[in-house]
Structures are given as C-alpha cells and as structure tokens.
Length: 206
Length: 254
Length: 88
Image 1 (cartoon, rainbow over the protein chains, first blue to last red):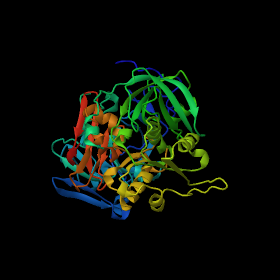
Image 2: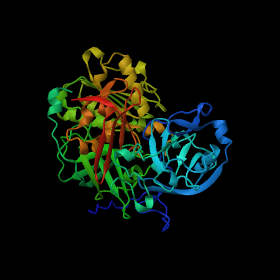
Image 3: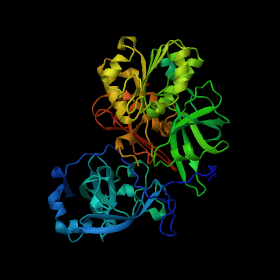
Image 4: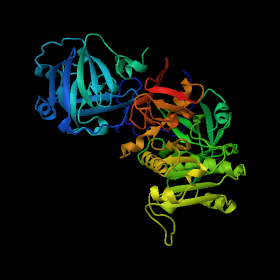
C-alpha cells in the first residue's frame, strides 16, 4: 500500500494513548461519541414504543415500554468499535439481555439460527443468534446510567459490542428469527456479513 | 443549467494530489484562508469543492470537504476554513498549519452547485456564516470576467467582525454598480447600523431579491436549517424550485 | 461535538467525490425522481446521511432512500431502487 504523505503536526484530537492488546487492528481510541446515522433521527415517544419478537410471521412476544422496563435489567461495561475506525473503551450500558428476552417468551433454545433486527427509519442488520446468547447481546435503554439520547439510538438500541458497531442497531423495534441468514442494510451493500473487529472484517471480502 | 453546460463537463478520474501551503490569511477571529499550490491542478468552476486528507505520524487519517474560495482565473487555490469548536481538522487548519506544510487533496468535485459567467444572471446569492465561501468564488470569477450580470448577495453573519471578506466585498461593490451586497447581522450590530438585524426570513427575501419573473440563478449556502428555510421561503415567494441550488455546510464530522 | 444534530446533515454535493468514483459523469447535476412520493430535485440537493460509512441520499420530501453508495477496497457498490429516474 502506498504511503500517504504526513501532514506535519496533525493528530487526532480525540485520541488517547492506545493500550496495547485492548484495541482491534486499525482502530483509534476516542473520548468522543461520534454519531453516524443512515437517516434522520426518529422522534419516538416511549408511550407509543413497543418491541416485537417474531418467529415465522407470528409474534412470540411484544412489550410496551412499561412492560419492557419491568423485565430483568443487566448492566455491562464493554469496549465498542466502529468500522469507521474509532473505538470507545469501557462504555456502560443497561438493558435487557437477549437471554432474558428468550426466557420472557418461554424459549429454552433458539428456534432458528439467525436474527434480523428491524428499526424505526427502516434500518436493518443481521446477527447470528450464537452471537446474542450467553450475555453477548442486549436491547439497551441506558448509556452511562442515563436514557440513551435519540441521536444515539434511544429509546432502545440493539447492543452487540463484540461485533462492529453498525450491528448495534439504533431505534430497534423488532427482532425476527430467520432460518437462513439474510443480509441487512450495510451487509447488502459491501460491508462484511459478520463483522469481527479482531479479524478486521470490515468489508465483504475481508 | 443549459443542456450545453451539462454535456460539456469534462470527465476526469479523481486522484489524490499533493498540495503545499503558500500563505495563510486571517479573515476573522475564527476564519482563515489557506492559499495552496497544487502541481497538476486542472482547473475548476466556481462553486466546486475539493476533499482534503490529512495523515498523522501514526497513520491516522482524516478526510474533509472544503469549497474552493478562489476563482478559476487564479493560479493558486484558496480554501477558507472556519474553526469549529472541538473539531478535529478545522482547528489544525486554522491553528497549526503554516506555510510550507503539505496535505493531500482531490478535486474539483461537484457540478451541481456551480455558476460561471457563461450561465448569465441575474445572480442571486444567499449565504449564512461560512456558507459564503463557494459564493465568493462565484463573485470573484464574475468580476474577473467583467460580467455585467446583475448580482445580489444576501449574507447573514452574527456580527460585523464575523463577516468574512468584508473589505473585499465593500471594494467590489464600489467598483461595480451591478453588484449589491446586503449584510444582515443577527446578534450584534454596531452603533448606527442601518441594515437588517435578524436571520434571513421570508420578509427579508421578499424585499432583497430579484423578482421571480427575472428568473434569477439562485444559490443558497449555509447550515441545513438556513438552507431549508430559505429554499422554502423562496418557493413560497414564487421562485421556480429548479432555479434554486442549495449547498448545506456543516461540520462533516468536524 | 455540535449540539444541533441537524447541523451535521450535509447533501449530495458532499457525496460527489464518492459518487464520482462510481459514475463517471457527475450525477450531482442530474434531476432525480423519488419512487415513493414522486417528488423531483437535484441530486446535489438531497440530504446526505451515513458518511463516512458510505452515502445514503434521501428524498427531501418523504425521507425515502434514493441512492445508497459504498466504497470498499474490493469495489464500489451502488443501489438506486428508490429512484424512478435520473435526468440530465
């Protein structure tokens, strides 16, 4: 790869010292929380919000905001990695794990191997169920102890921090089981289907 | 835009080129112009922009777009950059950059938001803040071409000291009776200020304008709220939407 | 970070560099019609989202997606399902 000429004295303002082995290849740590959206921020009122859990066109479960808040809550602290090369360390999230959603609808085992997340505004992303269970995935409603801001995906977003952050779909409204994997919004336009930051799986072909 | 204008757009592969800073000019307390030499620059049309790319020593790269402020008649390229608070690239360009420094750029880009003297007038330009930059390229080009197309610039700034290119615009209007500049100052006005003192609204656009019957070529550049409001008002005032070209300015990632 | 998120929204002009890698003639000068609502405008005037992941250009009238474009090291992707036509 050709070396790009260095611009004297330029460095990322947001960068911190990057701790070795903490950050996947090609990533830079930021203290900011950059916002990237594929569309306008939906203004969602929690009074009319609900989350649906679907299997083959039938509803496994549907929760209003009050019902959702009454489900078991989990708090996690994880690093997050955006495919646009910024990483944010030790981010704190609270919400309902995928495991607890399955329990809430009485599922001991996942009936199908894949999930498609559907969101307000039309965004979609696909995730293998194997990457959501065991505490790996949640529907998050709080960031740093406070309700997630609309621009950051509030009132609720999918959170799958071990994959590139485009998989942590903002404004999630529906989780649909799939027998066969289908590609979501970015996955169908050149981005990697799985998205493991440690293997630098940014694009289809990586 | 006429059919001839669009068909004649030459097609070039965009490639990154090296630019060297020749000079830095202070425009206002937050705005500087950067004058660049680019070895194999092919020329541009007023209103176009370019992408710049900065590479840090650790390999980190940042890319941003900036409108070209200089007219095509100038050999050196000028970019005019406003420092955005907490930004990543603009504070470097406005605060750290010095003559002799280098970065990469590619362009010119964008055939949509373009005016050349061949297109003719009347030319109706509406700017908010740093949105003046591509419109200034148009006015500088218009002057170099000795264009007689009547032109009106309606320019919104917070205060007089925030008006970018103020002295140059004053001098242009003194030299050219076919050019009018109306400054509106939204936050602070000097004593004795007789111009407008508010954001550009429908009433102001109704007064400071070329009437729709004259079919002016309209260019609006500024923040998204300004651009969307002004476009809507212009259409309500009877201007044909096809004659209104817009460019939203903003921190494209700051 | 800017407080007003709408200040972050740019337009098709800002996507012109990416689009010019795909379309040899500059499509920001073309008129485009939205498949969903039928309104027409210049590609340069469309609201741009999702940079730097790619370009998502949406209809100013109904927010429907008109053009999606991504530049990857393996090739450039373009989808225009949401557009009925482009007119130069």
